[in-house]
Length: 420
Image (cartoon, rainbow, N blue to C red):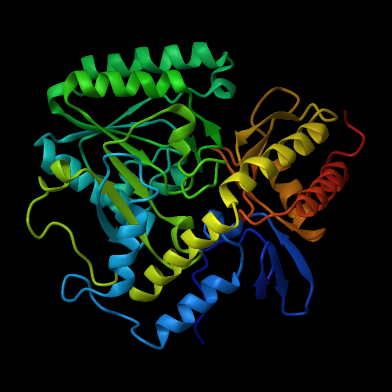
């Protein structure tokens, strides 16, 4: 008898039977509010009728048209439609299946285009689990331990995390930029540095937003030294933060943009975008893959774009995110163990610390599990697992947020009791 790998750890005990919008139903018919969205994947909710219809129609026409062998209409239409939402100047696209694949494609392009070997990443970033992507990941040792030797040419610089440093955002940003200059002076000379790779909001690293000043500093140094700026929008893209791209909050301009997760409402699809002038520097044959730009996934992505636009989901993410932030702050105000509530749009983290001020992953996990028992599905993140994250589908409604807040309040009280 075959079973799943014992290394796979489920965040909740739920066996999902079907889903509708922000709701999941188990095999006994119990409803759960899903504020995980498959780790930010089901951007238009579970089984949005327009996405389902587009996928069903495409399945009956063409399931797989390998896109270095033949073209197909969903691929060509998706590329055209992406031109409406990609940042200015990013007019060439390469598709893959997962975030890790897209990260590695961006890495390959950056090294080939610049002829330089090194990449500077920022502490707390998560970029994937494959060899190169894990080498670029510093959000937790579980993604790297026992996997050595990892890829060479990676250097780590601080991310401006006020909670971790115990400083203001301004102090954290100033420190991070000074340390980046130190990295360029001592570890990776500018002439050896192909790219900076950074998330607008740390994902697995704890839902920590960057700052406008930090991105301005990155852009200035990149331009001065001929270094590329790669922005990883795998989790922050497609309206998640209340703007279509997370970097828009910081007026940040990428040379290479990475996207995945919410791109196709649950179908495997990822990609990178760059300018023609940059993309043409990739070596012939260096981009490809068997399943990239799958016809059904592309059809789902087109439908996802339609739903996001027609239903105003970016605007809804901003509005419901503001509501959710207020609800979570109201709970946190009653518990000294919740030391920070932060995020952008529908990407919000609640950080827990113990009485000595240490990150408290045990309490975060206990509250997350209690919430699941009470019907609210959440996930944890952060280096110590000390952050409980809220990441519902962009279709989440006002009533859904209110209900989630009520369950969260009861769950925190059940674990922490009357401790205030």
